[in-house]
Image (cartoon, rainbow, N blue to C red):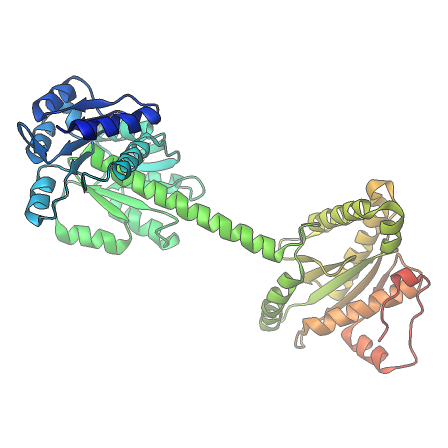
Length: 451
């Protein structure tokens, strides 16, 4: 950390030297404005701290002169004073002071300076879509962005840039408003905002040499996040680009964390399938969509045969492995619109929109064969399948369909397991009404209530 301290107090400089030494840095300290300007003319500094009162002037005049030096044009300057006089503060900012800090709070000032320096040292990373038809401006801007560790896709034409834009790749769009080609940068902004209205997902920085307040207001209404006037001040460009990139990446992190939390709440961690919470959330949407579009909806309920025996004889780790393998098999068997759920301890469920009853029965039989051939952990595993569906032309009731599939699983187990049984909701209701129809399942470990 190259911090230049301009202060006449020996006590202040001694405390500062101790803080800097503890941080492993070399101090740069002088006791007058002239000495500070002499140091700054010879070597750059990351940040300057100057006291308001100096033996040969004041910190405000020092700042004004420092800004005329090559090494002082863009460096942050902090004025150390306890004055609350607004006239002093105004003079300070007019002279180029970056910030004002109470002089006695040295440790707090040290932490603030380290923050300034760390912000400058941070490399961002990311990719920028840049539209500029001036070779001179683009060469300077690209140099600035590459020093910020940003990759740049440069286009002279807004039309070419629009065609190359990829929301999964680009973190920022920078465009001059007046560029060569079929349409202007204004049109580019408008087209991008039509498809990406969220400014946090796609930040846009506009540039122009036209000093027209009405045009600038129009650009913000169209959806730009920020604006730079030409000729470009490079430190201003660096700061604005950095702010937009950092904010975008922070919002991306928040969105990613929300997705992860949602997945944790809606996904079974063992099998990777959706859980019962997901089914409850999706049920209303599925029913509404099925009724609105009059689409067929089928379900396949799978109960792993003798799963308690697997846990008892092979151990729960093996049982978990079996469930993971079956979960992966079901996931790989799904279409994009299908919903695979861990319905219970050893029960797995497939909800199949746009799948007629006959097709669901065929898919269940294919899955039954694949499970029988899977041999997870070298163990022979089979499943009892219950299939049910509601066809078109009637209101969809997913709960009734699931109840029918559940009763079909009872029957499959009573008939010897490792088989597919299909049952419509009407058949399930009729069977439930017949109190004499009770299935007997041969293994008490797999016993289920028969109602």
